[in-house]
Image (cartoon, rainbow, N blue to C red):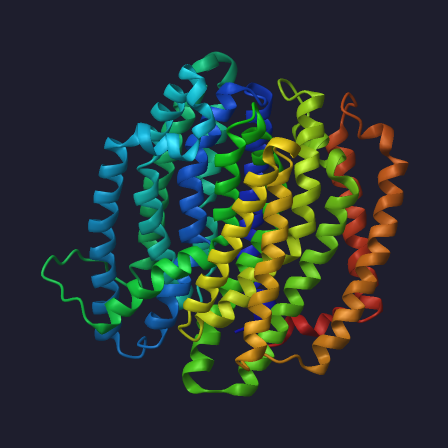
Length: 508
């Protein structure tokens, strides 16, 4: 496996999806802004979208890939195992969706208790969530197909599937002026339809490796029991960042427009997290699982160090750039139409504090993959549980005094706590050790990142009047400054050998 090329392939389609997602969110900002309609839709969208991230962004892989990869040499066994999981998923997901649909008022109250005082907003959120919730079933099954493809080191198709969701939503949003208040209903239907289309899309590619069959006379053997034993802890531990954000949404519902502020801020840093954490964690898992199975210690150490190095190479400069230009970024991407200057300022504050946690969000994904490859989901689960409790404690205690801004602060603090504890346990259990190449590269990555931040801060101030809320073509100037900063970082990194072009062709 070529780590950089595989990560690059995964990242390419992920970036396309995220860029389309930004276009989608710009249109949402224009037509809905950060008002009650936006809050209701974001709650309805956040629930299935959180599950999508929990299942598709490494979590399902964490439980499935190590078990499935270990029996790939025996086609009959691997097919039987996969079909048993597929059957149980369909049955379990169908009844889960059915029960939640029947109990939707209670469910939405639990997710957005702050809406209780606003009858119209609560009723709208319930209706929209009823429409979007079936997406959970289809996207979870689509994630199962993605895990099959990832096990065969086929990452492109799985990472391209989410593009469908953004294309459908953008299509609906182009009729925003015509649909008016009905827009949120059509967007909700588009979410569920996209889940069906993603499942169909992935089926055409997965059938080369696996032909899904529903077999109601299946037997729950030890392999299947082990999978489900690992699934819940892996959902919690691998998806801890998304769980923390969902917790934040629940608490933010008590403050008007806060759900929207957090949503827009979340959208910005997620593109880097998708590459620096999710992509790397997903790509290394199948190969790392095989090396663990065959006890190739040198290969295990090499791939773990390279994964950590690549994650920091991507996340540190991105975090610094977001800290420097959080307000300019929010203003340039979303500051149009109904999205006023107050919305820009508040979303930018949230983004600033999320940015401090960005390297930690990425490290959690990478460190968790080191445990998952060894079929160990318990340690990440317990650490993640403590992390979420810490997040809830900080958010609840200080929310009245500080307001919604405590949510990104609490998420960042709990995420760094999570990442540091994962690292400590890896070292204590002797599952990871630094090599000299990594330590040398880390110093150079930090140096290149600091130089880039100085340069980026200069060009942001140079184009400051072009990036103001009321400026024309501000998005073009923002893209220009980001491209300049990226080129500067890459040039410096190559010159001081924080990154070598020869790394691109290395296989791990």
